[in-house]
Length: 127
Image (cartoon, rainbow, N blue to C red; front, side, top):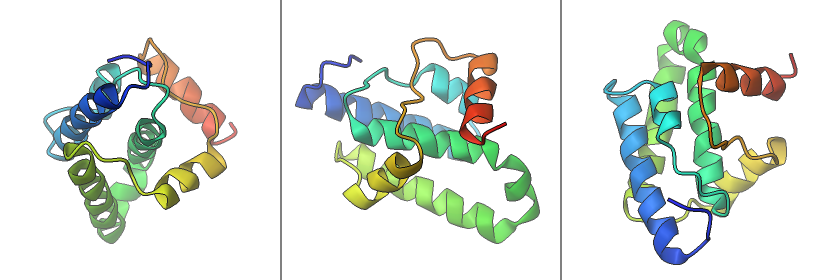
């Protein structure tokens, strides 16, 4: 899982991320566990966008507990993303652009631990 940007590495990494997203959605893995296993492919904008989506999923924990409609919509959205990635495909540009619009900086770092995730979340929401 490299950042060399080859089409083969993109496909392999996207399929891996699909598995991670589905593991989070089914409760087999926490978001933090998924982020620890997340590919370090910085060249693929799809992987950057999905990383942000997982971070948002974790950040929305309180809202998800209070609002079942929001939770269901977010789960459906992430499941759709996982299905696209399972085929090795890129996310549609409009999805990537929405994440890039607000989060140009990649959140993917070589070392992911609880402190790193919380520090990045605080920066992302301007705390």
